[in-house]
Image 1 (cartoon, rainbow, N blue to C red):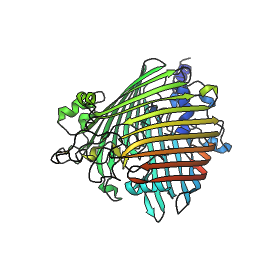
Image 2: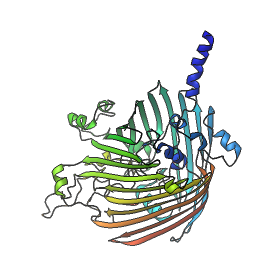
Image 3: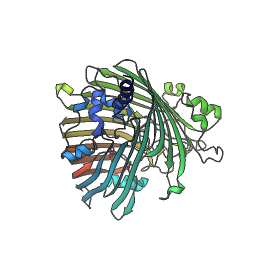
Image 4: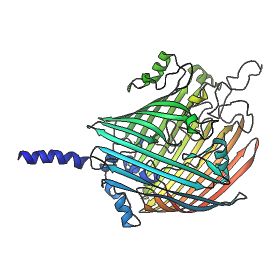
Length: 530
């Protein structure tokens, strides 16, 4: 009897924790689980991605979400219930950019992913890929300006082609019933929207250490990262300017229908001669608010605060919102004088699953508004960015965007469309010597001079200044999933993009491609030179 009880005590934790590990940060992969989390009878922390697999197995209907793989062996080798699981990561796309003299385009990539459930509580994962491709005109211009490809590393040029690579890794340990400790190189996403104004997965992967605490109806994330400022630096990683970030996200499910969140972040560099402190242990405290600590240190660090409200209505619809603050003074907000220091952003949106009773149909509408100078800093090394890309919205600051998304899934078949309409200010085509708050990589002390020519201008900064541009971009995809756990698919995709400006000729792109593609990580085609 005693031996039987001991055996049961050993087996129960193993069975409960059999589905450990972390889902890839990809909407193609995790969208079905997100839909389950948004149901009115589910109480999950769906704003914190990537998801833990243990959170997914308890969702109603989760065992029926994965379509059968194109070949049985693909399904077997990717099954996370196996101790070792993984698979290939392949891109083989041919296409054409119809508005370019060099019309023919391609994207060729190869790699793989592997996870190891070392124990019922310890999981290791790694993935890596390398690509060679030719970009459509608008992405090629952006890549020339930044030196990178969107979220996928340096752009090593050879004629018209670009070579680049990406790799990610993690080790995740579940300690007791409440804690996950994750050490890795990768990306994270905070929010329910297609975009995030807090932290998105736009930028290249970065080293991080994350503590995830779950108790009662609360999940609390401490995220410590090491970022790179590569502006103006050749392709030599030993010369990157290093900076650290320390972030908190508190998610509280007040009920199954109402979730609130609090976010805070601090960015500081380790090579400021005035503050040569490396990793500042003052910011390790997992529960303290950073802004009072920053003032107490007398440091020039960049601090951001955010708040989130998510509400479920009906059975399968979620309304969501975010507010992000960098700096502001209430009297300037009330005056509406466009003070440069009023750095705020707002997101509101809604997503409906099985919309209008049509099974497998998802519809989303979203509005993002970010004032000029948001995410910037007096020291540009401490802006809210990594590897030449913003850490939040891809357009940085000084814009208003309306976004509509629709998606239909049935078994392995998927059709999706995303339309973004954005009005923004452009600095680069108007006055390259002054910062009007549209480019987060420029110091906010480089503002234009006031009318008297003796002081820096402080007021009158609004979205659309100094040169207003309108960017309309539509992304369409029709695909047949070959292996859903890695996002391997046969796809046809079309990008339409139109850019008009007050002080530059209109540009248009029609980019078509067809072939095999793997969406193990999200792609980020929405980019523009600011």
